[in-house]
Image 1 (cartoon, rainbow, N blue to C red):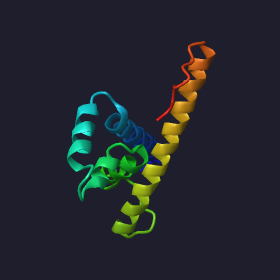
Image 2 (image 1 turned 90 degrees about the vertical axis):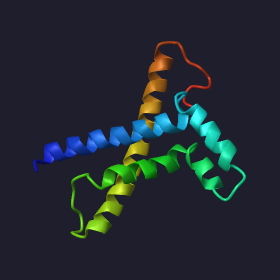
Image 3 (image 1 turned 180 degrees about the horizontal axis):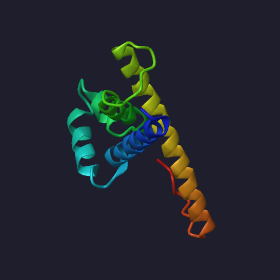
Length: 122
């Protein structure tokens, strides 16, 4: 596979992981689901699920797992180890993408003179 195509595939998947994570953990669309999960699981043995759906860093790991199986790239020659490497690479790169986009958007908002003191707070 051409290196440029491989890079573009990884880039699209990284953006998808970041976007899906952001939608699940912070969007108004998923707010009723997050609230329901929090109410149902917050006090029980599955408290971790309640925390997971509100934590972008945590959720990005699970979203990365969904994509890592199909993502091209062989690092070691061992399928399971390669998938684990891809999971954490996707997770870390999507978090960098999130931080970059948050700071970039905050810069644009400041330049336009529409800065909100709470902009970018998670």
